[in-house]
Image (cartoon, rainbow, N blue to C red):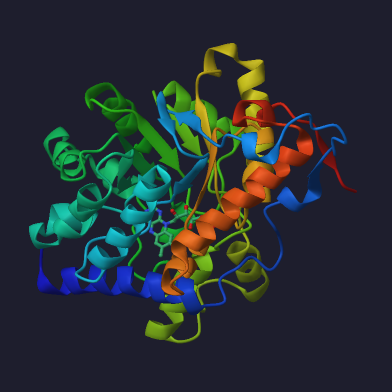
Amino acid sequence: MSDTKNNITIERKHSHVEICLHGDIGFNRKTTGLERFEFEHNALPELSFSDIDLSTTFLGRKIGAPLMISSMTGGYREAAVLNQRLAEAAEHFNIPLGVGSMRQALENSSHRQSFSVTRKYAPSVQIFANIGAPEIAKGVTEHNLNILLELVEADGLIVHLNAAQELFQPEGNTHFGHVLEQLTKITRTIPVPVIVKEVGCGISSSAARQLIEAGVKVIDVAGAGGISWQKVEEIRYTRQFGQDNRFSLPALEELLNWGIPTAQCLLDISMLKKKSPQFSAIEVIASGGIQCGTDIAKSLALGAQLAASARYILKALHEGTLEKTIETWLNDLRAVMFLTGSATIEKLRNKKLIIIQ
Ligand SMILES: Cc1cc2nc3c(=O)[nH]c(=O)nc-3n(C[C@H](O)[C@H](O)[C@H](O)COP(=O)(O)O)c2cc1C
């Protein structure tokens, strides 16, 4: 890899963290949609708060709580510190962890340690490798995929679909042809399950259907309402090139707010699973704007196996409150379970949600 290309990649990963911590990157035209729902109160919970059990399963393994730390970073020196802290928290709560895009680990072996550090500090939890759709479309080899999987002793491979992000990224790769064809090959050849996620624009039920037919085992919706990655890249673009004249102003506003809200994705994919019993074993992750335990609870009642978060976890890490924040979210979740009379996560999944008009 040339030095220039290497520097661009490192700058990108650095500025993603910096912009996600300090930038104005939320959607201003839409929300996750989770706030439109509330649980029906149960005046007779018939349980003690202390009896509540947050454990559940993900991909056949028991985990401490229905929460995952979403894919974020790796591939430069400072990322090793972030990944170590995320791994320590994942191990502490016995929850799954995704690492950031591992393209850099293939292009430059000196950055591999910033990924492998996660396995060192989270020896017993599920860790997921990560690669982007543009890499898949190019035809990443089985040999290279195995390097990535071995680096973190991965329990699965996450492939992220990020067409809108690449569209706005100054150095973006918009070759998204043949992703499905390549995914079908990958799901047949690698020894671990494949998870496909978006990064903030959501996955529709028709895209989910195609992905499941390609052999994908888990869909992480990463819907709209959290980070707009178009906005993150727009900030990077204007820093480099000044005013963005690539789109007309009204269209720009619409494109920056592009995407399917998280709750809508969950409802649509849940419906797909109900209509197509052959898809019932597919697990769904709710992400995109998850920021507390009531969001996690609603996600489960809308059909998700677990919820995942990136931005708010990153913020907590930055503020030195990572474990405290996760503990608070889990306590929020316990509160909802208590007030709905759900001693277990499996019971919570069947509780009634009311739509608030
Ligand atoms: C700093 C940062 C870097 C990210 N890098 C990646 C990545 O490399 N691969 C990936 O699949 N998703 C990446 N994401 C996206 C998240 O995994 C997640 O899908 C998205 O941010 C929506 O979730 P959120 O609203 O909880 O942040 C990144 C997120 C953040 C905050």
